[in-house]
Length: 296
Image 1: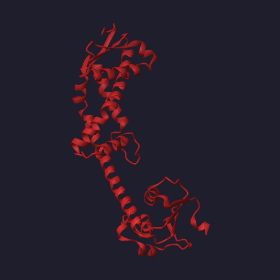
Image 2: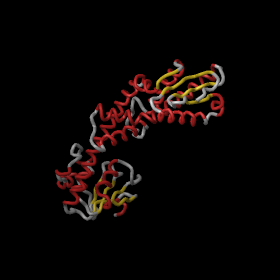
Image 3: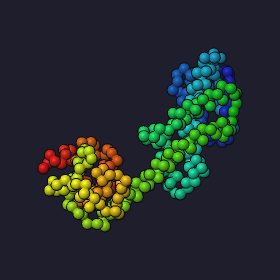
Image 4: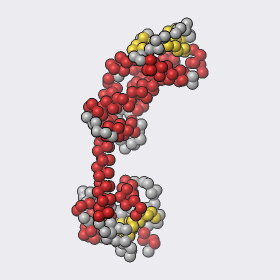
């Protein structure tokens, strides 16, 4: 294809036609969003469709820097979108040797959530914005200093450090994966316990807003710590490290009530305890807004 007259910015080489077409399409689409730039920057592919030529119509230094900055941002976003899943999979499978069906995919999904900041309790040193900035800097440098470069070589050699930065994220993702596995095993064990044991009470009422949470039977009698200790079954003491007064899950599972009435001011889906009780007791749970003692 003909290369348009003007100031050549850079030529990017690709290993396959598919890569070249994909990147060309992304560049073209992105440039269309900049009215001034789309009239001054021209893209073309060679006849073999393995090279993209980028030409700037004017020679103004400021316009060149602006064009380079936007092109670097587009290339950074394109590269992350295309390669981030592959890089994460390489780290999960090759560095941490998770290769069981479903395991690697789950860890990768968690890692992507972590990078996107969806787990606010975990602060990564290299979040997605940090990776984008790092990629942008790499591309801006190569576009500014080089008239022609191989995209594959750039990915392989200049971004090795960036791939290493994903190790921290994957480590966190594996920790989250293991905790979720343990949590699900606990939930399953509690569900099995409820199926295999007869209810000790028709209904138990729990004031979750109390500090600590308070338990009542259907007659309005509050369970004391000694009552709870007597009822606890060693088979389901998953929260055994907590003082008896702070335990919620194991006492309720040990009681195995036919109905579990939760009294709380928050939303039904808020909090670890509520989520866990819903997962274990399922349709046995009923939510009430007012504290139980006001209903006596």
